[in-house]
Length: 86
Image 1 (cartoon, rainbow, N blue to C red):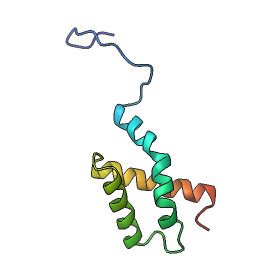
Image 2: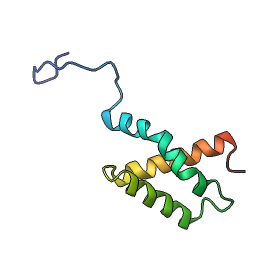
Image 3: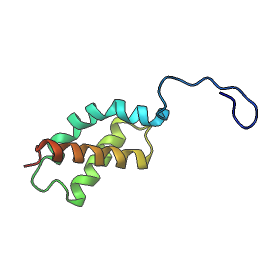
């Protein structure tokens, strides 16, 4: 494919941005890491959310703050959908 500058680019099979693929690859381990903390009855308190983000930052120092927040939100959503929070 040729961009507006006339440069040809080869595209990978995935159209997903590389950072999204990175977050997707880290989801399962983040779920295992955060499940004990976020499955508690008071899981959505500010303290637990802060701890969850802190644990992910320690485990994955290369992730940006917004990526860590997105990963925590995805883990919470997954736990709620699976019924693991109750």
